[in-house]
Image (cartoon, rainbow, N blue to C red; front, side, top):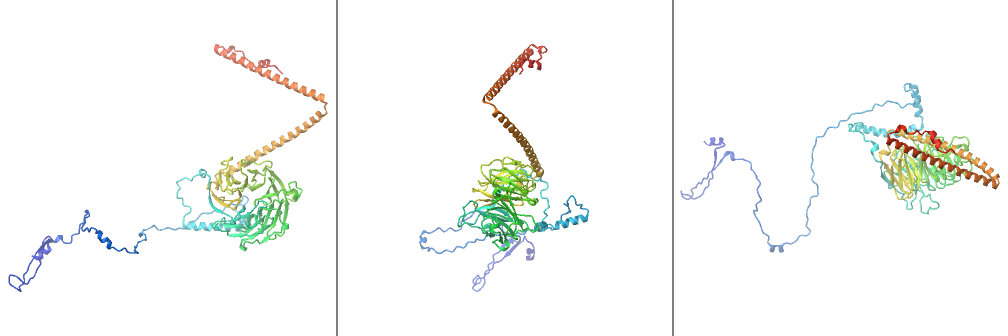
Length: 637
């Protein structure tokens, strides 16, 4: 029975509780057994607990006793631990596996000149050897090698040619409004501020900038004014990377395009000096005072030579000197800027700016203090023949002179209150010019990327960016850089970063928008067409002016002859002649008025007759007035 109950879960389970005692009915010493039976179903054993929500209940509530508050003793100090650590959680995610593959670009060799047949191995090999012997080949390969290595490493990591948004059309660059943002400001570290007279970017790495500092105001130099100029690293603009210590303040400073460690500088006292950054801040060699310029050297430019050590300079003393930095004791060549071609130094014009285009190695141009641009040819046989021509169009010094990088025959000049664009084919006048500004213009340069964009700076601290394909009367972008006058301007080779130097030695670096530094669609053809059209127009005007001057000269010679005849007349004859001319003029005026009045009356009669014929419906009966009647009505002269 008990076994059957154990097998059946519904059977009740009996539990007995036995109690023994010493006394009972049977007498002392005999145990009395008390039994109590608990009964529960087998299925009720081990059931889970079911909890439910219910309102809170107060089990115990001890009310505070105010009399016990006096017995409390405050504890000082009190330590209160606080957990400052933030809660962290760890998650595990099964990410996708990165698939890496080798990618390449199909490159076809091309770019051969027209006279080279790519199919002829002998011609291509000869041309390739010729190119490899050129001086710029090694520097270009070294420069491009770093960029290519960077691109190859990028390409190994990601697919740089993958089209992520192929379905979307590329945004037009023209829709972006011209803008610029300041990326850096470099200040003169000296207490006595000087003018940043010249800027030069590092030829290989555009992260370095050489700045020449000098005070160009006459006799404004103080005893505590520094003579140093600096090379700045844009990644660390708080401290100059190298301090250049010349014997006289530098007015011009230029990197050597073939050797970035070498710089040449023109001093305020007329001397020339060059530095090698690997040898420190002191100049390696300085030109002798007696063989140098007599005035500040406003222009110093490197020449394209095999050695890479030749340069030339220009100064307000009226001379252009050629130098070889391996021997700065004396110049290798001298040119006096005498436009009368007599070679006299007292008649020379002071040079304020110098221009040289490497693609035209025999030509250079000089901007003078008198507003005249002198075009020179170095390879001429005699010194007078070296001055090829002049261009005159400014009322003051030509502060900037630069050729268009894509069209070398077109050049820009900045002076007085305007900037002018010239063509070598039109020497009497510029082909384009800006309006007259309220402030004096101090510097200017072409964009290195876009042939239709150039930059100008003004005395009021404003930088203007001109795009004459977009707007001719006003600049496309005008920025207020600072309150002091801007003195120098230089654009990077990539055309995106522009540096502006001020009178107080502050150099502001600006990054212009992509629309102003990206070649637009068909821009070269449009700019070339505009230059050619304006040049042709100026040629027509020049021919017209020459014709008018010739006629004026002939007329003036004829008037002089008549004046001589008039002087031979007696006073009475002159009076009679003047009286006769007066009455002839009066008679001609009276006849003109009579003729006009008769024509007016004839017109009224004709109009009145037409109106009556229309009313009566007799248009066929209208008299026909012919030209003969008009001639009969009008009195003849």
